[in-house]
Image 1: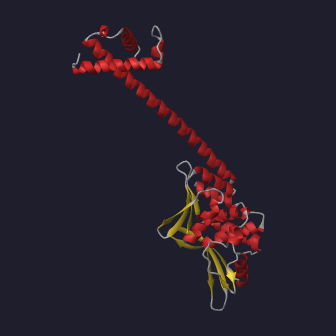
Image 2: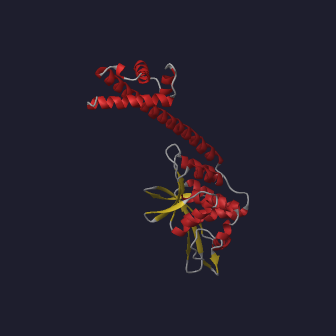
Image 3: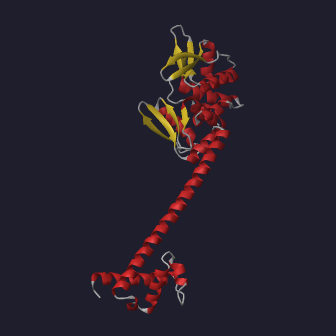
Length: 315
């Protein structure tokens, strides 16, 4: 089972105890997966279709707990190339109208042509916002395996749906954004911290713990890699400098002899030849008298200038 499926499985088992939260969660699922049809005789039908059995089960549970409607269990009704489609159909007009009135999308004997996913009146409280995000993610969301990369998204049919989900997410500091992908509009979050916060918002405690465990391991690994890379770079820099210094000293020795150097420079040159791997601080400490790191660096730089002049034939 993928990480995304594990999250949805956990969320499907969590149902808010307050009826207003159950309504908010069902409204999000119905808004993304449902369709309403009206017949000429005034009858109204509500159909909720999904390819995910987990979503169908959760929808059935919410209908039973929230509206006391014992609809048929989700049944596979079609076979398509992408997989199975599960459908919950309510064709009792009185029940459908009662549901739509509760969701505040039925006015004056007809379904309101709303621009948003759910009526904002249903998600005024923080707990209802949590349930709304949970329902939206269950209906049309996905989350990547944190071992690979961080990405959470919810796919919507219209920009107004996506913007409402984004705005509700951002009330929890998610920094969600919306992008168009072909004919769909996608609400997405790519930062590990914000995704962790959203898992907490949706009350996916087990998934949150697993996600955080992966994040900790990855951050520790990245920290170690950065430290190793930094130390390796410093070591390479030190080795390259030492090789260049030895080449300069050997050029002077083979050209005019080390006696050509002033006593202080000659002492550093001999110490470097005898200790090619030693850093500047330790190199200065073995001199008599000892010399600080900056002093050793200054003398080696002077030796390099002399070697350059000798290579140019100026001396």
